[in-house]
Image (cartoon, rainbow, N blue to C red; front, top):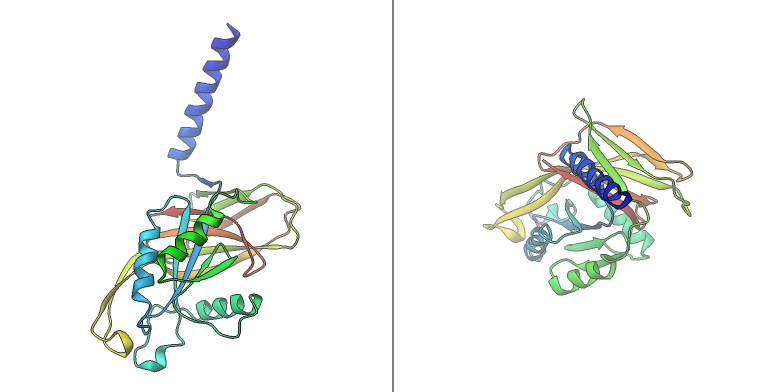
Length: 240
């Protein structure tokens, strides 16, 4: 009798969990965040753009495209570039003690950078972290007002974390009319349209914040990162 009751209880629990997921909640146990710094004016970037697109089909990976503007002087203005993207890349360079920034650069989980066009190196970097459990398990659910709510359990952090809210377009096709890629048509995937600081989290208590839907028609991601450009502690993602 006890065994049957326990089995029934487990069945109910599974059903309730399935219902919660159906309601639109997302809980990420382990996610490797890959940031590609690219440019429409960079002739070596299209190969990396294709690699980034392929990463969308790899389980446990959140790939994001961050176009930068510092190659605009070569004859073509990158209209997908956000000023904050170049600033973020330079912050990574400082923490990595690098004098220069470059494209195409992929930052993997805020811990390692690789040349984004070298697919084998990219996959090797991802595989180095994909089996490690995230320190923070992030849960995100749509809110009735059209925004989202994010939660995470308390955690003993060595330094405060930054909670990033990211909105992105799924695919953007660009016909390049000048510069190094003149005449080419390039598809950019998971293009960041907004990268917003939603606040800091000390970890001493649970994380529980609500935020408005960011710009972008492809999806929304929440990234919890040690400092502004340190290791990624956890992430969650909802596609539209």
